[in-house]
Image (cartoon, rainbow, N blue to C red; front, side):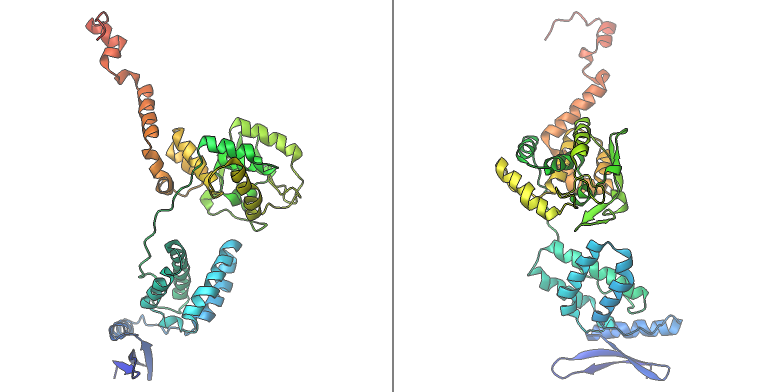
Length: 377
């Protein structure tokens, strides 16, 4: 016997592809007959062409520990690692537990997705799928899998998130009611569009007073300085003159901090974002009589103001630190369809090309044709 399909179990049948290799029988679980037949055919083909390799056996639980130690801890940011550890310990290990990694199938992963859809939002599930694909990709490279079981899984459809924006008059009310040293931080966030972590991670040496720019090089997370979200997030952001003036005054009053931070806590420690939002940002919204919005809406408001001002989309992308124009358009594309914005673009066109307006309004044309003295209609 070179290969066959074997069945085990009485009430619940489990199918195996059984292959004789080097005098020993190798059993590969299906779990369906169709899966077992596919595995049998693929394995026999690999044996025939000399590409067959023995798959190392390891339980998902043990592989997860290995992956975190061997890959994640040396390549990912602390915030990303903590998030992954939480998902692995609370969700993936209880579901996949002590299963052999090589026994995990796309059907199992799809079942996980279906179960989680009853508990959380699709975006959360997509993030968990990204983690599984990442783990299984390394398992494939390290010889624990022959294929990635998460690659063929259908992702849940995502509803486009609502972009919350504060209008200019609402921004003025917010800043008017903001108290303490964080008022300038809120203003800087609105005028630069920085992410919260980038804002709290700014240091005074990042300021370029001559070019009126600030260099975004890092992010602050749970009191720890770390790299930015991506390489594209490292950028120079242009500052308006009145913000430069405010920052020069603030530099004289800024508390001394270990990392020379632009916006430390009043005690000179790294600002705790959650604490700032709860005690200062949300409080300012309430005092101003504004609706509740997230702190991230300040970044969205910046993008909206840039679009309404007619800034070039490529410039907006670079200032916000997006990796591509497509991301900027995907998030804020609907703002380009605003009637006022569209009217503004037409007026810009008319200003740029006055010679292509109505010929009757062109003095050169009127003189040439003798039409200057025509009566007004």
